[in-house]
Structure formats: C-alpha cells, structure tokens
Image 1 (cartoon, rainbow, N blue to C red):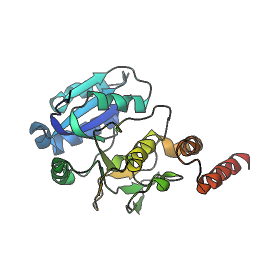
Image 2 (cartoon, rainbow, N blue to C red):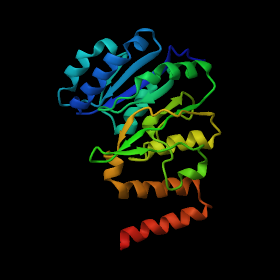
Image 3 (cartoon, helix red, strand yellow):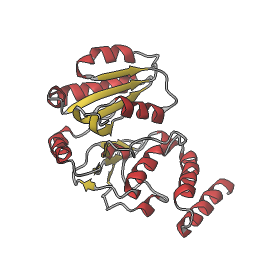
Image 4 (cartoon, one colour):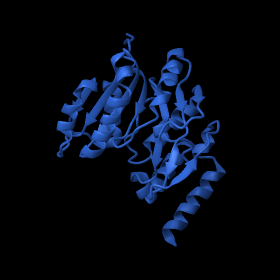
Length: 247
C-alpha cells in the first residue's frame, strides 16, 4: 500500500541538550519560512533525545511551527535522524542541525524543483568557515562519481536534500560518516541529481567529525573496504592512514 505524503519537504532537526542552538534555529524558521509551513509545503519534525537542559521549554515556545515532535532516548545522532525519516511525511527530506540556518531565499526554487518530481538529490554548495569563523571559500560542485568518495566527502550533507525512497536511511554502525555513506548510496544507484550554483548555508568546520579526524579516517577505511575492494587508490589510502598512526 502506497502512503500519500502530505508535504513537499520535511525539515528534520535532531537535538540533545543544545537549547541555545535549538532556539536559534527555531527562531530562524519561525521568522523566515512560516509561509511555507502554513501552506503545507514544508513540515518541521523535531527529534529530541530527552534533553536535560531548557530545550523542552523552547520546543513549547515554538510549538506553532512544529508539525511532529518526538521526545525519547536514542542511540546517537544517526539513530535520531532515522527516527526523523520514519516520523516525517514529506516527499523530500532536509536535515538541519541545531544552531544552523540556511538561505531561505532559495526555498521557492527548491519547492518548485521538488514539485517536478524528477530528481533524487538536490545538491547545493555551502559557504565554508574554519574554527576561527573565517570564511575559507565555497567549495565548487562537480558531477559526483562513486570513486569520488574513496578519500573525500564531495558534497556537504547540510547542502543536500534527499528524495524519500528506499535508499534514505543512515547506517548506524558508523558514528561519523553515515552521512557520507548515505550520499554515496544515492550516487552509486544512479540517482538523478540536480546541482545548484547558489550556496544553501554557512558550514562551520568545527563539528564532531573535524574534531575526531582519526575516527573519521578509521570509519572511512571500513566504508571503502565495503565499497571499493579492488581500487588501487584504496591501498594507498590505507597505507597513509597506518603511517599517520605509527609515526
């Protein structure tokens, strides 16, 4: 049985003890995209992992723009995102971190492209900032190929909108690179991708993966062994990783 999806896009936000960031993001949504929410173009789905700070009061404050709120313990950020997929009811999903905002002026174009129902991925560049909040440029987008994922993340997760299909899930065996695994899955399966020129958001390179680069590299080896066993580039990547641990 096919379930009719009510909204064009779901914005999924996961939160745990980040009331300051949650308030910033919900305030932004309330001030900038209420028209899309009221027109049922967009739904807001919040997954909160039983926060112990003041997040619950913030969620009550902005309950007027929240379509679905789930408050329960989860097994980490990717488990929470999977819950967001499960509880959402949009044809496409966009995952927005607490403390983040995006270029709301692009929403009309996004909704139009979604209405065409042609593309599986909508991919945007992002403005990149380092840990000192200095702008370090906008990484240009190139047409993605599976091999691009061997030792890189060719696009930003927060610059990607996903069509709901059987490929849309996060592999929770990864703690850091499940987003990379997800985008690779779409690319590997021949998804139709729409590339945009305008940056969707400001991305600050001070997140968990940047601060845990050894774990990222280790998980990337596991990812590559699953997907690129016969690639010569994989061999050199593993050697480079081992040298970085030994010397």
